[in-house]
Length: 141
Ligand code: HEC
Image 1 (cartoon, protein in one colour):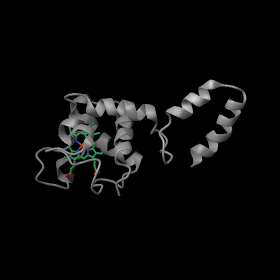
Image 2 (tube, rainbow, N blue to C red):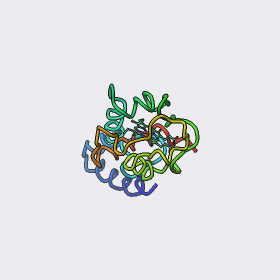
Image 3 (cartoon, rainbow, N blue to C red):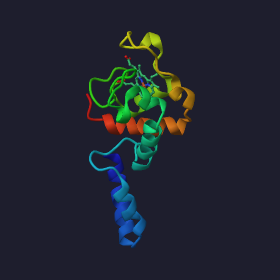
């Protein structure tokens, strides 16, 4: 909401002055409800490639597109286990990981390592992959 209030006059001004970049930026923005700051078409796409890359840890445990796998819960359905699903909380979960003692399902074989384990994701990569998780899961309760 805040973003659209801020951007509307700006976009109008740019269109008015004939700047074609404004139209391009608007077309690339995700459709539907306004996303939290940090969740953009670009960050979602970057997160998608980190999450779903062949052999990448995220998809090995959570399944391709986060639908759930043997060693990780679904990220697209079911109740949130470690937060209320806010973007900043997802960033925190991925940064910190889920230590064994915090697992909701104690029969799981592995905990979740911080920052994708061996991937050792940078802050920007964590934010991008969190944006992707948010985008596939924001309909969850
Ligand atoms: C070794 C397997 C494994 C890997 C690799 C892994 N996860 Fe997880 N993930 C888990 C487990 C297990 C949980 C917690 C399940 C539980 O508490 O029972 C979890 C929880 C989560 C949650 C919290 C879900 C909720 O409902 O609150 C998010 C978000 C998440 N993972 C994202 C990721 C992302 C993004 C990556 C890659 C950077 C990743 N995971 C890599 C196993 C994994």
